[in-house]
Length: 211
Image (spheres, rainbow, N blue to C red):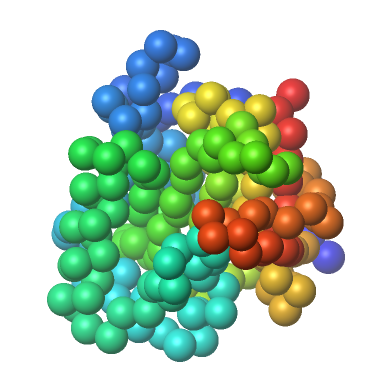
């Protein structure tokens, strides 16, 4: 059994990051979140080699959330595929302001072990005014302790950064470690579907409300 989860980070942005004060947009200046274990920062083209190990692994693929992504599954066979994905993510950040794709850097491992995607959703369903968090990790890090630590680091600050009343992320029934981490971090499983742009109903979301 794990030790109780540490207290949530309530919005301190470190590592010489820009400080978000409620008026600065995350799309104008993307801050970093860090503790003694992880550094969460905007994705960089130099992350491609590390991320190839994540996105080329078919065992990691079932844990990627591709809901409402026009059929994409994020599987990358080559370094070029990853580089093209990073280009797209940065266009969405800098030009379209659609979402932010963060690198998850392990200070212990000395490299990037996955990514997080976050955006504020506006929709005519239960997940209106909700931050949608996608978590893509290498299979070696698809563990309760790792995921819980990451959630505790980012959940509350992300709601502040993106101006959301709640945050939600997907964890299918087979994602046992992820679901345990979500429960430890204060998320609750929801029955309500996320309704896609084409009317598709997506299930298995967990949600945390902002205090």
